[in-house]
Amino acid sequence: MKISPLLSRAAFFLATLALPQTGQTSNIIHLTHFSGIKGNMGLLCTDCHKPTFADDAAVKLLLDRTTCEKCHSPDGAFDGMDDPDIGAWNPANWPTSTGESKIFDADGHLRSGKEKWCLGCHDDGTSVARGVPAPNIAGQSMSGDWQSPAAVLDSGFAGAENLADDDLETGTTDSWGKELLFDLGSSTEVSHIRLYTGFDSVYNWKVYGSNDLENWTRIFYGQGIMFAEPVWSIPAGEGWQEARLDVFDRFQYIKLVKISPYPMSLNAIREFQFKQDLQYGYLTTGHKFSCDHCHDTASIHIDGVSQSYRSQLNNYTEGYRLANVSMDSQIIPALEIPRTGCNSGEYPRTDNDFALCFTCHDKQILLGDVYGAGGFLQYPLQTFFRNDDHLDSHGYVSNEHLRHLRGRGYCGNANDWDSDWDGLPDSPQSCPACHNVHGSPNPVMTRHGELASTPGTTDKVPMINLQYSNADGVIDPNLKNTGESIGGRLQFFAPGSGTPEKNNTCNMCHGDQIIYYRTP
Image (cartoon, rainbow, N blue to C red; front, side):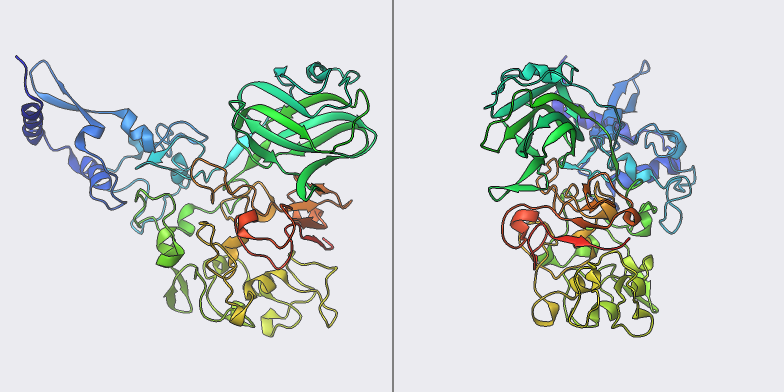
């Protein structure tokens, strides 16, 4: 006998009413997922439970693990399902029989040992909630040695097949080639590439990655300039020339396009290799605090919107689920963004626009200079963000943190920063304009664009792309220790002043590729 779907659902509903109560543990779990206290998750009973009939014809509701995996993904660097400390499927992390959370204490803070709870979703796994991928806060951790590609595909250089033979004596046999195309064998995470060359002059290149040979992404810009574009400049001489890429994603094919119009000598390129060797993210290059140091765990967390903050809504604290800050016996917003009021003169030192940042950072050291009063009198400067080659009219080095936070225009109110990453500047500069506290591939948490990008893309990478100069004055993308550097350089994109159209974050007084020098 066939039963209509409507009757079947009615019978299922009535049967569930007869199910025994399962205690406070079950009630708390249901409240979390259905009451909206963390946001409307858009779930139905049958999303999590699948009805089955036992031998006695009683209805049993079995939990469907696959539904939980959509948010609490088991893949990625942190297992959000079965991990003994942060796994949501692990009964050891379920509420007690009296309804007490084993994850959060009574004040909503993460308990000891549960500090990585959020990373069960916010890693490089596949967590998706209401259609929105969880931002990868954990970052990347990949390591490996240099390896040759699986094959060299059609190339404009005769003898290009020699570039994957592990022989540094054999290479290209053509002088007029244009492109080199390498097949890595499968879609692979790549952080670095290198060429073994024997050039008689400088040659400039562009580097692209693809998974289908049709859609190409520029994955390395380089610090050289040719025809008013950024290029990878490989100098004259013999040896390995290494580059850390700017876009860290999975690619099967890598293409090098020669921009220099003049021919090369024979046997000028002899080998190509790549590797996976990159570690960045909240626990490695970020602030490393427990998430609830900055975020309000009781706030609405899931809303089906990839980036909830919008400047026109003036909801920075709510949009990023930030906790308010207690300062001078007052409870104030974590950050004032967009910044309003007057931002010039002494205001960056006296207002509370950056309250959350100064719960840890010393405001006087960060914003002090030779003209400061009291604790703000700091000279020599204590900040590393300075250009020792740039003196003001009185012969003093400027504090560049202070200079940027003072802004431009009347009262420092020029909208130079695109605070909600929609392409339109909407606020004077603030700390998050340049820094991402969740960690970055670049030094001192300077933004590289991964978390600001449209979910599932790298459309904002590499942003300003700060890289340090080593003690010899050479740009070293792998250098992270500020004390070992003598300055840094931003990424060149095109002539003229920096703009959000080019760097995806802000208008600049200077060109894209600003260079600064300082003593460590």
